[in-house]
Image (cartoon, rainbow over all chains, first blue to last red; front, top):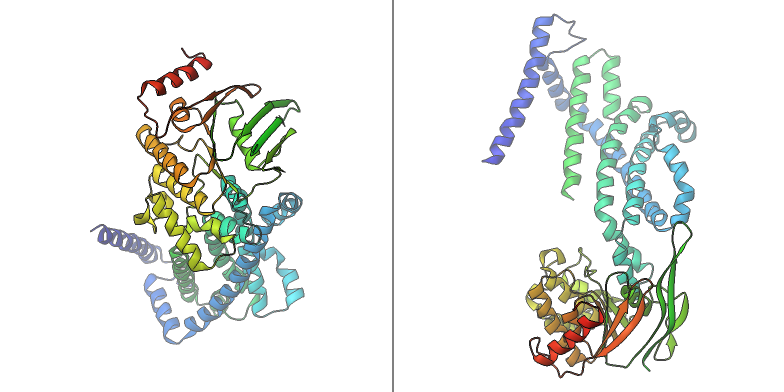
Amino acid sequence: MGKIVKVLKVISSLALFVGIWELIVLTGRYEPSLLPSPVKVLEGMGELVKDGTLITHFKVSLSRFITGYAMAIITGISLGLVLGYNKKVWEFVEPVVQLLRPVSPIAWFPFIVLWFGIGDVPAIIIIFIAGFFPTLLSTVSGVRKVDPVYLNVANNFGIRQPHLLFKIILPAAFPMIANGLHIALGTAWVFLVAGEMVGAQSGLGYLIIDSRNSLRSDLVLAGIIFIGISGLVLDRLIKLL
Amino acid sequence: MYISIEKVSKAFTLKDKSTLTVLDKVDLYIKEGESICLLGPSGCGKSTLLNLIAGFDTPSTGTIKIDGDTVTQPSIDRIVIFQNYGLLPWRNVIKNVELGLEAKKLKRKERRRIAEEYIKLVGLSDYKKHHPPQLSGGMQQRVALARALAVEPKILLMDEPFGALDAMTRMHMQDEIERIWQEKKKTIIFVTHDIEEAVFLADRIVIMTPSPGRVKTIIEVPLPRKRDRTSLDFLKIKDKVFTEFNLK
């Protein structure tokens, strides 16, 4: 019963949103290229699905995303474990991290193009930067918040490195690391699209730029909706872990 | 003497650079197989002394020797049981008990066999696959006990092990410790502020006073085991302890 109510709520919320949108389009006499109607956008979505454009771009985006995100979590977690465990080294590194963290990954774009050229790599690097900092910071704080009792117990039973890391510290810090991975996923997905808008010739972000260039605002909105849906699906998927 | 604690002092430097003396020239000698209770109000340094014997910390001055060797670091020969159990919540009961065995070079099957034996000893065979948060406090402390005993330490150090348990469970756990102590013949040092617990379990009760922590007196408890908490002799010793703390 509760589930049905929940689904009904979601449907009615979306329906209301689309209804208001349609009403604005009908009453406002806007130029269709400035505000396409929901029907037009739905047709556009159908078009993108049917001719295979969507799936091609989605596949490209997803493979970039997986590569960049995997790189971010592998380096973020391994560096985070080391830095979280070595308090002195972390104190030394932290100022630099805090300085770089608030910089949007897109700001690095000029350098990224100079260093890595164009193609898949710039988008991957941008996703990497976007996912790296949340993962690193949550891992460091997760490791530092490991209950000292666990360390005493390990010490007492003669558990030394590297077992200490894998048997005690990593599992103890895991809930916090998982939280960081979740945040990193959302951030990385946001910047995937941004990265593809400035540097790529394919992918969901490029789809939007391409549609704009051919003055198809219905396809722009269709692309936006697809990006939203796939981001949501990814978010739900990682929550299952 | 098996464990000799000679002129041990421990001072901590506080944030304002002043020093706090927690233990002041403590002398204590413990025989092998003895059950010793460190009893006193909070701040008397009893937990600090236990940590020093465990090797989690080193004395500022003085030495602690066990079987002739000075204690400098923790050892699997003397396992600490903590008030909050120190179980790993991501491991189930049997995996928790196996933790200490993993550092020893044992085959997986052998590890499992030993772990099961000790889980049986503490009466938790039906809960092998449970995770610590699913168990009651008393059961969690039994798991910690099984984990400690599984590595066959010579000495058990218990830091207010039943402090978080309700009165009834606490007495059951005391019975349990008594039974295991009889069966396994370990040297036990435990910290408590529960007078009855001390009289029930200890061969000798070391009474400590705070600021700075010192040994005030040592009371022998020459009662036969298993002790009757309501017998006259038991109450007489309890009386003596109360007198020492000026609680009469």
